[in-house]
Image (cartoon, rainbow, N blue to C red; front, side):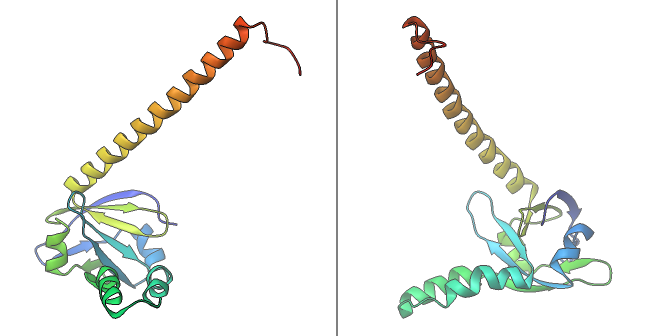
Length: 165
């Protein structure tokens, strides 16, 4: 399982050191895929086994030629194979690195079954989105708790507290 967050620098040849903790599970050769997002672009790193599990089955579904082309584009556009060199680095294609917003500083984040490689800007935006989502969840939970407390308070007013039924 991929967990943890690590920061490493990308050199002028688009090589970046992959944390040893992630290399162990990814292997010496794995796939990386551009996650094209306007707000938080990144590169997703998958072991070959995980990539096949996630993407080969959907690609085999029975779709029209036009639907297949769209699906294959979403799956395979921006995918490449990474080979770890003897210094623990991979080379990221220049187009994919640019589209992901990677320049010098790169942040590796474990997402359970895969790893994301992000720019500091994408990482910060992702965290902001998570905080907003958590705030919405917290507000919903607080509203539910308040409603429950009101119901319990109404029970007290009706003399129902402590009654067994």
